[in-house]
Amino acid sequence: MSSKTEILVDLSYIEKGMVTPAQDDSWEMGASLDGNHIRSALESLDAVAARRAKRKFRKLHRKVRKQEEREVKELLSRSYWEGGSIRPPRREVREVHVDSALRKIRGRFGGRGKDPEIGQARTRRRRVYDLMQRSTWEHLLDVD
Image (cartoon, rainbow, N blue to C red; front, side, top):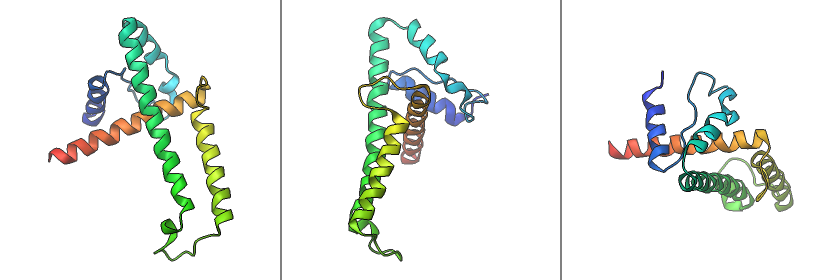
């Protein structure tokens, strides 16, 4: 049984012209993120609609990736660290940590222009779902 939030997120997917992810009890565990549901749904669409849905997903996936990279790059600035009780690390140390974090993000999402591995595709689907869920909540809070 889908909760009201899941139904609203599914409606957001449909509103944006994308294929909704499978919703069942195993979603949180990641078992239903294998992509079979999405693959079969895309095959049922005509070629133009399937292409649009894929392009929209890729656009949102890139948006999430850039957002995560931007958040990590903020650690480089001294202004991020000022005002806190922790003294900012030296620039070289910050650069090492940021480079490491960016490599982890690239490893989770996969390289640009390359087909993702199974785990990377799962991460992309999950991050886009989280973005859709967050935007649905923000829309609900703005309406009230």
